[in-house]
Image (cartoon, rainbow, N blue to C red; front, side):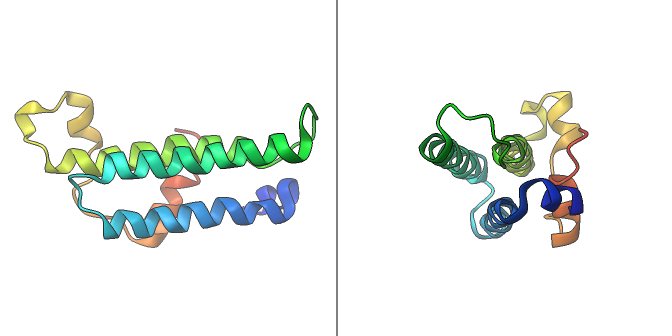
Length: 120
């Protein structure tokens, strides 16, 4: 997290805000719909970040937080679909879905550990 702050300064607030909102969405929305809701939310955030980047630095080569937002988009959408897989019948799941589904919702520390580990 310190490296992220060193690289992106104040823009890192957007990353944490998206992650925190996604955590609360995962607890507020039914698992039946969480995959779609999470995917729409993270793609809107990523799209908003790209539109902001085009508005402020069109054609520029400055480094901003959009790369981290794109990684966060993949992590959070996978998290949403893994939560969704826990309500499906086990015989309808693939082996990969059975191994990666999330049956018990994680705490905030486990969630942030998963989301900010980009080595997966």
